[in-house]
Amino acid sequence: MTKQAATADPVAVDTAAARRPRNIHWGRLMAWVLLIFFILITVFPLYWMLRTSLSNNRALFSDPGSWLPVHLTLGGFKRVLGLSSTEQALSEGGSGASLQFWLYLRNSLIVSTAITVGQVFFSAMAAYAFARLRWPGRNAVFFLFLTALMVPPIFTMLPNFVLIKNLGLLNTFPGIVLPFFFMTPFAVFFLRQFFLGINREVEEAAIIDGAGHIRIFFQIVLPLSSAPITTLALLTFINAWNEYFWPLLVAQNDNVRVLTVALGVFKSQTPQGNPDWAGLMAAALIAALPIIILFLAFGRRIVNSIGFSGIK
Amino acid sequence: MTKTAVKPAPDIAARTAARQSGRWRSLRRWHETGVAGLFLLPALVGFLVFFLYPTLRGIYLSFTSYDLLSPPEWIGLQNFTKLWHDPLFWNSLRVTLEYVVINVGAQTVLALGLAVLIHRLTKSTAIRGAILLPYLIANVIVALLWYWMADVNLGVVNQMLGWIGVHPVAFFGDSNWAIPTIAMVNVWKYMGYTALLIFAGLQTIPDSIYEAAAIDGAGEWKIFWKITMPLLRPILTLVLMITIIGSWQIFDTVAITTRGGPINATRVIQYYIYDQAFNRYNFGYASAISVVLFLILAGVAFVQMKLMRADESDLA
Image 1 (tube, rainbow over the protein chains, first blue to last red):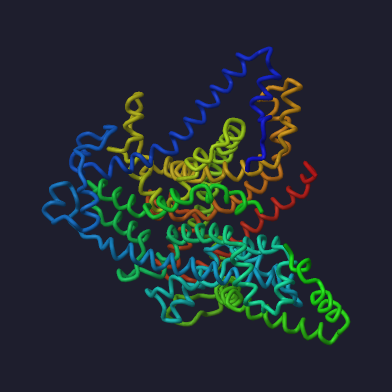
Image 2: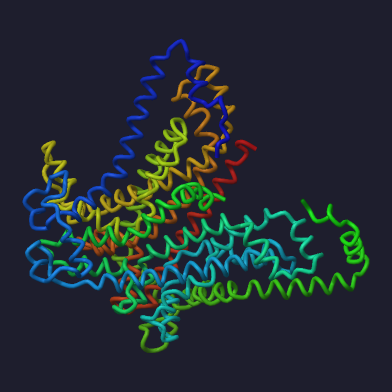
């Protein structure tokens, strides 16, 4: 990352263009203004979500342009989490309808965790077979895996729905998890790149010492690749948490419904004339919270992984 | 560090033994193939059952009439001839294309600008993190948030427009505005991500080139057009391919906000597929439309690949 030493380019630009420093300065200032404008546009809607969620929904209608929460209250959050009585909810402009938020939160956690653990582990095993073992047909099989990257998800999801239905797994956790549980082409591809880079001598030495491939995999390859595996696990979890289309198809029942689908239902149930915007935004904010926490904890890792995922 | 250095004798002995004995080697190879099979098994099952089989089955279903209740019935090309004469299908193609053009056009230009700004101004991870944030938030949440912000009566966007004297716009309710609005919502969501992809590409351009240009007295504008753009072209092509293919599959935002309306103004292709399959139980017909979408995406990928080949040899 820090490949630039003392001769960073701004310095070079400044010394070279010493004849017209004012010019450069104005240009840089403009560029900073532009960049800050971009950042504001990015961040403002997130602030607005917070501002709305902390508002009294009734008061929201009288003062829609206020920059601060209108009649600051935690009512929206209480309504979503089922902590307020129906009268309380109605008085603050809620719909009075209950949302089994904790249940959906639990479901989202179960689904995303299961997908992450399965997908990362099995993809790592496959990546090991592709990167470190020699066997006939290896390249052909790998190429076949890669072609799956080109198939748009919608194309496989209709037949997968039929399959899950025929297996009797509609509205079950296995039904939601299974298609993503064993691999995705991207995960295999991503990890294979890293496994290819592991020094062969370490592995050969282990073989001479009598270690089998299973031991090599668990005791050498996995520990040496803990960084990319963590990154992959983060990306997988975030994707699973955010997935909407597949759970919409296979998990409509309350007992397995995940948060994204629940938010859609919550939105469509709220009265058309005066929706409970404060409640909706509170729900949206809590649904995004796990991702925001992961982002605060692992932000640098996630940011630096972008570029790898898309381009390599 | 390596074991070879610590105890060379048994190591070399073992290796020569392995080299000498062909039988041992072939045994080892068989063993390795077996182990590979074991390691590959779960992923292979997942691939065959949930990727390859549904792909083939999807193609098969597109030639059938299938309502989920009775078994699929082979009807040849009927789905495709029906599709050819279906105005709603052509509408969905047109609407999706409009979305793709606005979304990819705006997103690429803005992301390119953002990436160059970051590259020339700062190394801060915090800034890159801030612009990535919308990408990490679920489509559903982003859609809800903007549905509220762009609300015709109370939305903050219309409040701001009001301050400069513009009348409220029904962003999601007006059939002329709906697609551009949804396109811009997803520009907001994906702009930072795309910028970071481009930024990763910018980092592959050696700093020495920029330094040399600066010493020669080239201004930022000239540097951008004469150095950055030509050297970035292969990566830009790749980024374009990713965003175009992704944006053809727009669904979540539509499903949360307009549900295809007003009338059919936002009935994008994936929403039409969903509608046919799950509201009308025309699984065969829905599969036929998916086949067409698949072909379009394959075509996009093919054209991009051709373009990329032609433009290689920039830094190499």
